[in-house]
Image (cartoon, rainbow, N blue to C red):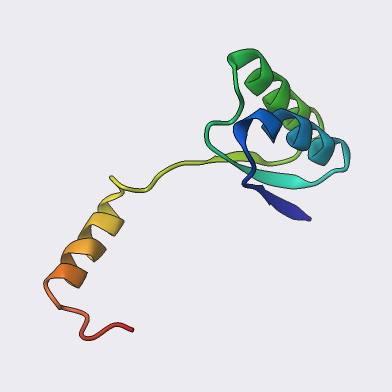
Length: 81
């Protein structure tokens, strides 16, 4: 099982800890938590259960997406709907 946590930051720790306890892998949108102590608790909870606890990051500077953006702007991919 896998879950994406896209809730207000103040709820990330509570939700993440419950997911880890239930054995559910999670992608938690950034910021991971409201402070470093909460982020550490989350990381430790997922690690202790052998689960993936990932953080979503923006892709604005990803070279592949920058290339795609240029190709779209240049019309290289034709009409998109």
